[in-house]
Length: 224
Image (tube, helix red, strand yellow):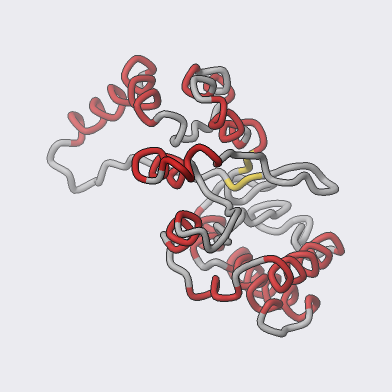
């Protein structure tokens, strides 16, 4: 089972309220994740790359994985017997609710560009609802929009098996939540601190030591 790095929950960009990560609920999550790993998941998963879970699912080596709809689309085109049996479901709900990591992608224009005006006009053009809707429709439910206005788009209901994939629109949190998205939040995300915290516990560290390591790493970033 493959995991994507979750968001890094903080009380604020400069840690005014301390690390929201450093609390009892995180310890319980680490313990649960370690038990789940040892009792239910593929022990070779720590060596997987981004496509390993797709291949394992389509080969019948695993029966469930956290993923976008890419496996479903591949099965539809190449593995009809698997496709007929597949379905999607929302992530389990925890004590505080159900949350997803919201991938964030930005379009930037470099200062050294000789075509800044044209580039900005192009971004405005393709982000305009008329053009953007066409792109979203072609994605067939694989693309995830960060605003609720896309929740009722027909792309989610044309195939009922894809309807659960729209849940992150209302349940997702951006990197840095509950603080604002920022460069520091992105640094914490790209360093895989939360993911490595869970891995350390899987590999034998105590939940307390794994949490302390992650908290210390986040403090280095947010206190810099």
